[in-house]
Image 1 (cartoon, rainbow, N blue to C red):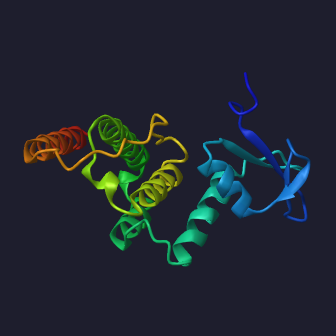
Image 2: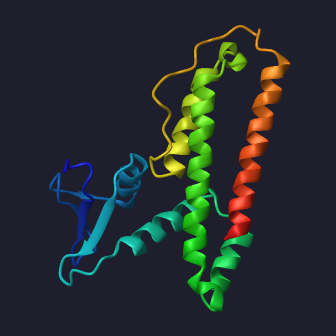
Length: 187
């Protein structure tokens, strides 16, 4: 198994400092977030007790991003999560969230595949490549490095792509959305 396939082991010392066992240096929460965005699995353990602290630190990373105005989770979702801890729904919420994110990843993957194979009339717009790289970085960070295009940039195409292509693309996206809603309603 390659090193990048094994979780990166981070040890927390009694002083609360975090130690990267691969590079033999101390790391911060920002460093851990960067590892995760790069697609790396991370495991954080207490050196003395051996307790797995990964969940605690991942929640702390999310809380810091949310408090800095980098809001991803709407208030209604946060409120529902708080409520789920005190209701009978607590048992189904983790499975529901996992299934929802899996459907989101599948939809994004299909969308990225389709974008890579379709002519893109926006490719000739100045700054489009920079916007595309920024969007890919955002998707990668949101999905923990999972959502990556096949590594090819769309060729700059002329504006000859007809309205029929856009209509077909729109129909396909609507179909995918309907499929996701159907899967969600079955849960």
